[in-house]
Length: 227
Ligand SMILES: Nc1nc2c(ncn2[C@@H]2O[C@H](COP(=O)(O)OP(=O)(O)O)[C@@H](O)[C@H]2O)c(=O)[nH]1
Ligand SMILES: [Mg+2]
View 1 (cartoon, rainbow, N blue to C red):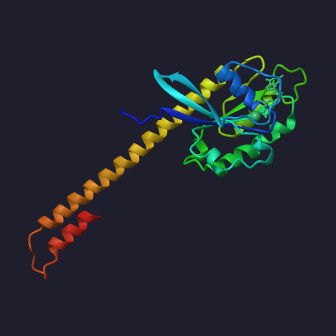
View 2 (cartoon, helix red, strand yellow):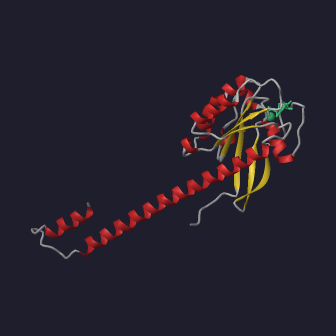
């Protein structure tokens, strides 16, 4: 069965300021890390080509330009997202607590067609640091309660799990796209079947012989078929 698959995936990265969103993207796309903190970057997104199931797919990874501090990213940022990456800092518990409101904010702003199955991925970043403050178990439990969101622990600095996490992000975004296409196809098929049935009923009605208006048998036959 031919399904429509998008060649371009829009991925958005959300989370509190300084959890490492920009660093993770840079590590994944440019294999670079900087210790310098930059609240803003020039580009809205970085792109990377990935091969999934023998298909070349362009991932467009959108970064906030520091506006996350005000939680005012604007609807254009969220629009048409195929996957949402939620990032927290494993050494800063507040950034973990705020994942809930980032997820809620995404669902409100992006209003995906199927919120229960929308692909999120959670990243617990900075695992290279000693002062860990959120346990793996606690993070995994939260992810389980949210329809089993995939969870990865990463270090943008050391490049730990970054590729693996982004590969999963791309795969899940594609899978979601395919599922959506299948569902649309089903809807279209049901619609075609309905039209066909109505047409054939209409033909049956048209084919009915002229009847004596006082003899309702032909009419009632047609009515029975309509039910
Ligand atoms: N040790 C460590 N520092 C990190 C890591 N990721 C980011 N940082 C640092 O954390 C600060 C904020 O990172 P940034 O990517 O700008 O965060 P953003 O505000 O979420 O985009 C910067 O100083 C980074 O160098 C990491 O995995 N390990
Ligand atoms: Mg940033």
